[in-house]
Image (cartoon, each protein chain N blue to C red):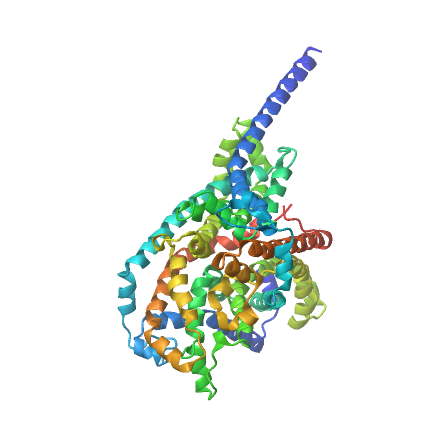
Length: 315
Length: 299
């Protein structure tokens, strides 16, 4: 009886101590989160509220409070602009091309890299192909301009083969392919990381079983390796849905020029030019807001799909 | 496991050689544009405009580097970038750690966790757009100060999620042991979690260093005075923008413009601005692959 009493007494005390400690820990957790939350409110949430400019004839000196309200005029005007359709089309074509090439190139490359047994060679290749990911579009644009100008490397090679030099960066035929190829150049290596992780996750006994059944390397590739990384590929494809309107602002801003506006002007570059260079704040905000809303819906859809079919959760 | 695979997946000499050759060519093509720019930066102007520079410098000289390194505004922008990386990187690190730790707790230990998490993820998924963002920073009086470059980017949400997932994989027993020893949340974070998270911490730190070094757009629109431009903005404004003006279809005009443009000097500027990234890259490489893979592991 006595023993039991002491036991329950101690456990009671321990429970209170634990509860107190837990409360103190929770207090600490909230404190830790405060700085980040304040910064996010200031630089993400307040700008979200700032989208009211889209419904105003905004004049900076008057501010949000005294600028006149114009309802949906900015949106109507946007749909009436002759360039709107072309800009939307450019955005979809460039973004779509990048998504497809950006899924295929690392997929194929990691399958080939996976066949390499020599560790040092494999690692050297990885070191090289990851590098462009870490360079900015400013630097890469500078490098590409050297490569593609009239007397640059590529045109020298073309001349050497007896061809006519091409003005790549002012050509409406060449500019989009260049955007897509240079985006693949920057990102394909880095994207292989995810595929390679999935490849190492394939159970080695599957290969053993396959080879006992007489499967050669090609058979193994098609019946073990590819099915093994297909779920990852489908997941990445689903998640890339959120990027359908992101055609690559930084890249295009650094590489384009007025001569290729008709094929390379995208929503983001357009917002930048009319908003910050031509000071049509209301219109630019309206265009940006429409893009944000559509992108947000696409992201939600892609996460839903990924959660349902691939059991993927962001957190 | 690797050895096992090697035994089963028999060598096929032709197939293997083809793979090695293919990979070598791809890697070479990846580096080719960079090598070409390096070669141009060390070549003479006449050789460059004659189009005779490929992989190796022609008429090797260091003139363009001498010009770059005595260019006051280039060096000034370099200093702005270094300052931004140090200040911004430090802020990023503190905020990332402080947010990732509480968010790595489950809802039993920290009931408010999911509300915070949705809030953080929402800011990642929805943006107010460029103009309201600019107006906010301008209203706060941050234009033309270093704070405009480091505060709006202070919360790297992607890094927070990466580190959070890493923290979640830390064995629960470690934290329980620390709790029994009477360690509070702060001490558990600094004495238990941080020391064992070096790979993940290095990954997120290097990501934020790289992203601060590479940013040009915020410097371009938030800094009116050239003295406040970070290096990438300087290069964007003085090398890239001027180059795209040169894109004219009139051949005579083009010839005239390219004779005054200085491709060797521009190439040298681009290369010098790459050097800091090339310097941290080897250290980074040790960690980021494992950091990303571990960070991506979910329970």
